[in-house]
Length: 199
Length: 101
Image (cartoon, rainbow over all chains, first blue to last red):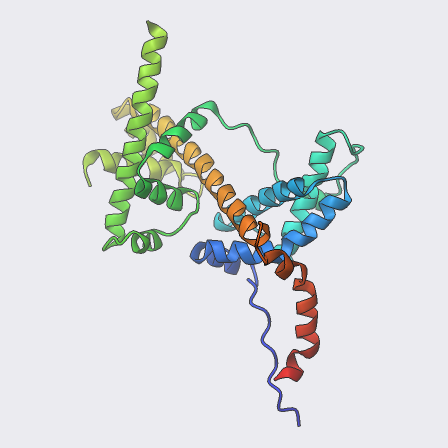
């Protein structure tokens, strides 16, 4: 008789919803586990295809950003483990980078490759770029609340708890106060610029 | 909420709704724009704030990833060894995990 208990499977998000939840509740821990599991494979691939360790790091970070944004926006479809998805994106990003540098012949992508290729990043709009500077000048609390909600897509319940607000409503009001502060700073700057230009 | 904040919330509801607006919602927005001539311009300005926040968030995430990389593979980190032997450890766990218990 076998009295040995089966080993539990390694903790791994089973699907996109689980991955999303894991990223929202423990972003650093989840990204660190994905990093440990996947980066060595990406690094090997990039080094074997003419890249440097820094290139490997860059494409891997781009791939993780794609994964994060898709997962929290609920637009990620996983047909395999997240690490497989990350490797596929990284390989395709590196192929595209090689083509951009003119080191690889331009070949046609297969449908599968094209599916894993994120859209060519657009140059950030000048207006959005100018907003960046004012985000950096907000207080730490406002910056954290706005980025947690609008970029990291954390639920307001979580934001309220993290910033010791007594209710979601208080956190919501604070979020809009921060947004108002940002709008005011940007509006003043734009008005001053327009003023200088019309003088 | 103050009226100014309620206005921001109304514009946000219009800009960030997950699905395309229904004809009734579109009509309501158009009516509000007729009654409030600055509403459309304010919505465009608010859209630029969201784009700026998207850029700022992406930069923060990139910094966090650099921090993770540094912790795992930076000078003095043992992470590279952990990561390099990850495959071997998984194999050993699969092969001997049951026996150990």
